[in-house]
Length: 99
Image (tube, rainbow, N blue to C red; front, side):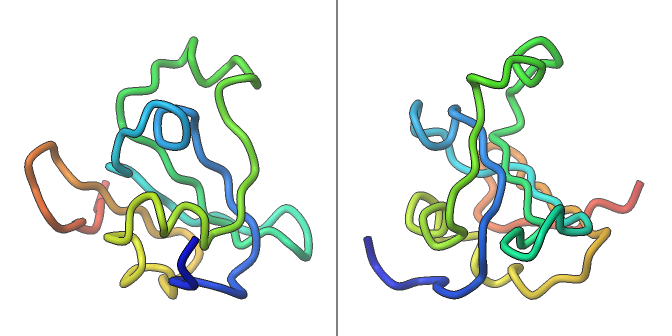
């Protein structure tokens, strides 16, 4: 594990990223749930509602862990609470979601 985004706290990520190896294609930041939570939520963009309803399909990780899976998230980690970003398949960079 490289020190790419240390000291940023915990985040939520799905198994599609951490187990299946999909890149992060959707991420948003909400108000943290506790003192350790960064507020970041990371998904591949392929998760269905049914998938998300199963607590076994996601977990809590250190933000640095997810940055090691997909370093393209790093430039956005200082974004304000309430913002969301997506990366369409084949794209290299995230864009702000405006809707």
